[in-house]
Length: 356
Image 1: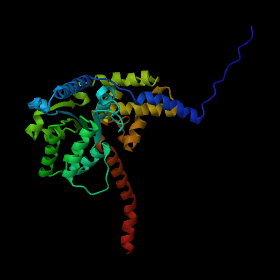
Image 2 (image 1 turned 135 degrees about the vertical axis):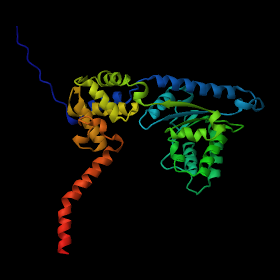
Image 3 (image 1 turned 180 degrees about the horizontal axis):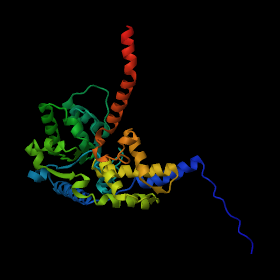
């Protein structure tokens, strides 16, 4: 019997390696890990659709009275990194009413905009108008742009408007400006010939904004994306294993796995969306290194890239990691660097002062 000639594996070129990583990361970055809160959100969106269908099923405007003559509001709140935007994108991409919502030429009933920080009521109106196809370089008054918005909503057949990061419009506004924002939103949902349904998402401060007006409050329903430890810490290890093994096709180092999960939750500031992003970043780091197993060192690298911290301040390596203020990781790292530079330059400044 002839001896089999051993085959040697040809290493991938850099371009081939990037292409392979890109294909894996496409699967990893588009992952959706379902939670009970997604079921709640789905139910609330269904109720929003039912409200819309009840109003639009009325044959004549005269029969659309009371609650049958106005739109409704769905308010999704949570801290940064909770996963609000990803959850809404999933809903928008799934629902027939919203198909093609990101395409200005599609027949979608939805438009989606994000309020920049900071954002005035006038700026918000201009952003919505631009999404509806109206752009102008003229200086236009606030009330005029919102009149244009209302006309464009009807002309384009838009029934649902999503405003993300609504807190940017109200967080620095004076009381009179906040009242104008409330009145504007009410005027949109109450248009007699073209009521519109609003989907608002943002930080918990949006709740206070809504509850400050009884008319808005009674038209609103709320979904709260709470922190991990409050409801579903048990889902984090399952999510971690599912994304690494099923989506990325890699192994997962389970040495001190409980500690890794706790550190991950702390690094993500108790927010599930941020935890998913850290897992995705760790996978990308492992792929970049050519490692077949995702371990704590990859999470360490991912956290270091996001925060700019040194190893002693890295949640995934520090001994007293629970004491690390994740929200100010980069700020703390920079301030420590500034202090070190100040200490090393102090003798020179004192010498210069003596020689003056």
